[in-house]
Length: 247
Ligand code: SAH
Image 1 (cartoon, rainbow, N blue to C red):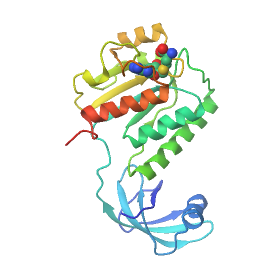
Image 2 (tube, rainbow, N blue to C red):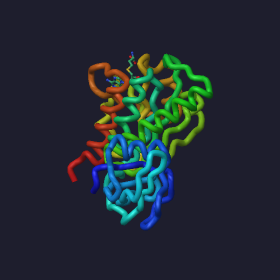
Image 3 (tube, protein in one colour):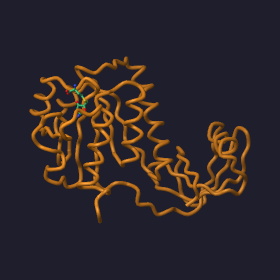
Image 4 (cartoon, helix red, strand yellow):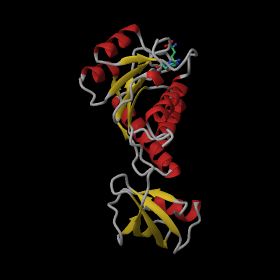
């Protein structure tokens, strides 16, 4: 596999010529210093990953010819849905990046009672675009072909009120819960992990989650920061039931 992996917003198939705009032409030509004829791989999240070749590189436009599909096994069979209390700037970016590397399929950012971040609609949409680009870069780096779905930020209580979550195990991470995450029965294919922001969840939120069918689970005796808790929970899930397990 060529070492450059590029996410493109086009339909992919063998023989297709892609016309890339200024930003990607700059990235290939100036940042990576590729030349005509150099090889790369391209992916779009729907059609998988393909070998490709640079056909021409200009300042404002680049043409890349798509070649054969590449077999990849980087998508996790365990479908992890992370519902993350929105934390401050860099922490949230860190969670989105690392969750993508660890194979998470869907991220729902939620506003919670003790969350410190408030966003109006316009800023929420901007943050969402930003998280999407963080996830795409993490895919390019980690060999994933499908970026996780990142939902628009939503209030936790309305999200909980929406009803069935279509997962096998709905779990809320609660410091002090008596059940360790690693001890629950293996989910068949899908697990939902609900993680609090810096300030944690309120008692009311734990109650609402309980009513919505979320079981409280723990990650050991220490209180972890929100980003540590998210990554630890994902790593535990992948090592108990997913692709960090011995095959
Ligand atoms: N003062 C807060 C701490 C929040 S830590 C409190 O006492 O709840 C941020 C989030 O990380 C928590 O809401 C929880 O979802 C998760 N978390 C941190 N440490 C944890 C642990 N040991 N077990 C389970 N979840 C944990």
